[in-house]
Amino acid sequence: MAKKAYHGGAFFNAIGNEFTTLKKAKDIISADVLDAWFDPSPKVLSKIKEHLPFSIKTSPPTQCEGLIKTIAKTRKVPQANIIVGGGSSDLMFAFFPHTLKKKNRVLILDPSYGEYAHIFAHVTKNRIIRHRLRKEDQFKINYADLSRQIEREKPNVVILVNPNSPTGQYWKKQNIIRLTKDFPAALFVIDETYIEYIDKNLSLESEAVKRKNLAIIKSMSKVYALSGARVGYIVAHEKIIDKVASFIPPWSVSLVAQIAGVEALRDRSYYAKKYKETHALRKSMIAELKKINSVTIYDSIANFFLIELLDKRMKADTIIEDLRKKKIYLRDCTSMSTQLKNNFIRVAVKNKEMNKIIVAALKKALTKEK
Image 1 (cartoon, rainbow, N blue to C red):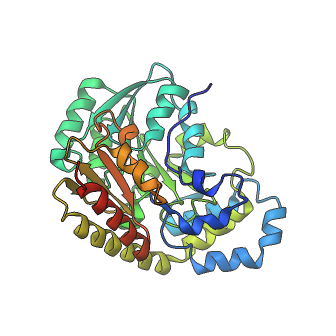
Image 2: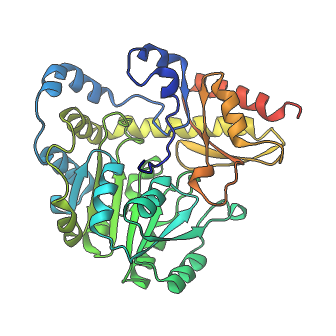
């Protein structure tokens, strides 16, 4: 059987994946994936509702021309430097098999988003080089350490998820630009799925347009509350785009998703407000959980944070299984790293009421007698 990447989303086991009991979703806390806790922009919902029968039964624009035009306008990059797909994972599976050779070496962060390791190990079958981030440094990238490893290992491709998942740490764009200049032979692929939670102007999209060794992957799932719609895009130099574009199938993004993506990009003020609320919700959860002596909390800049279990008798999978009985789903980070050994839990920020339930359940699970 083909190897598949492991992700969160186990909560659908409780809801039912044939969708006959979707009403159960309201009783489930799905904090094992990083879907937005807030709804899409009201403008998104209004447009979809108004044209729902048409948008479901009608074939979308073949090459997503309107969506690309809107991305170009709002992100201030040329249309020729953009390709879109059904989410960032869809684009990754098109991008890497057509830009990598088997003999190529790929450097990834550890810990980081597990899809990358899966693709390079099981799809493109490249040699994976791991740059280990240290918890003593709050899992932040050290420029000197990373630079030395690139110099020593000479990877063909360097993957940086920025801000990173599951650590939630952001690395300044100046550092990445410097790397692209110091190592012009390497292709730097930056996953900016969560960048809008800080500031969309920190994106490297405009830099990717003019640099032949830089590509930016963007998901619109988490920051625009469109995970179910599946929309993503890549911004890169035209030579990179031309190499990959022919492998993107027609109608790669549904009409519902194209409409949602366009409307979401146009409603900056709504999402800016929600990002601000997300930071407040996260900090409130962390403040409560820091009162527990048996854990260390690693804050982030996005809609999630990390919990390290300090008591050797506590195991992430055991705690997560215990909370699932209460319909609370969190993420064991073991599969996202070679150094996290069943002792790290990632928690997604939800709404205020759900966060209180998560915190209360964690306090009980993490302080009970062993």
